[in-house]
Length: 294
Image (cartoon, rainbow, N blue to C red; front, side, top):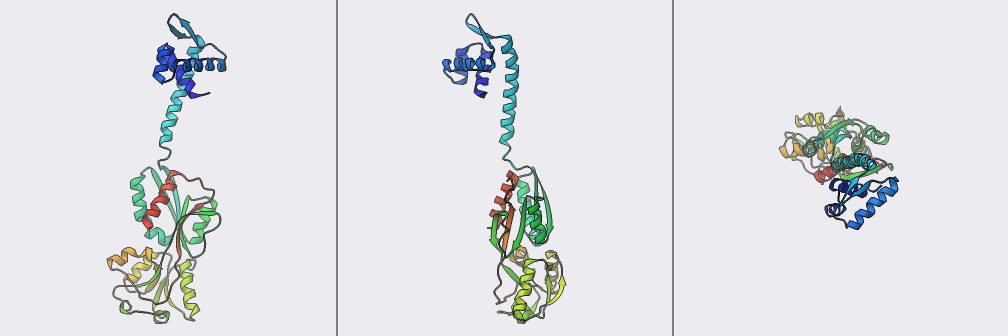
């Protein structure tokens, strides 16, 4: 049943005049008459009776008017609620590797919450295998990770950007003043490294192995914030993603070493499962991610 018929019926019932009802809804009088006839044929009842110059509801018409008002009221409420359906709300579940969650997420989440306060954010951190598994099983909406390899085939890449790796030291480390350093030059320096499952930790080890060198690994942790603090206090040197140390570089707390060795750059990726329904909360988060990391 067409909602236009219901609106015309309601207007005729209220004004008790087809001509006035036609003017009110912006239709020709003949159109209103046809609509009423169509309704009566469909319902198989007489909705109006004519009394002189006015038409009045029959008993069946009065009963149907009650239903019509309920239907139109419900429809208006539905339309009003759907206006807000595209506004981010609900829960946004994110999985991410430790280094990116620590470096990227604070500012990103703060801006997101300011723009979309009706969204509750849940963040789970882990190594890359955990993060990809969370997406695969549908336990999270999106995942943020870093890798050298191509993205899995069962995901959609919402954002992708190369992320340089850099060797770094503390501001008081004498190495900061040296140029064109080789891996041999830094082989015996105490290295602070990430966990073995970390993709760029593996790349780090492969670089030295390719030159038959053995880096002096002094300390290992999955927490990049701890690594940065240790390096800042001249306990050793490290290889970390540039995006994870931008603020420390600006503040002079960490210094990028001039290492001549070319280091392959991994991708930062924001992904979601290929079958994932994209809510407004997810869409706005991916848009903000693109804008902040371009």
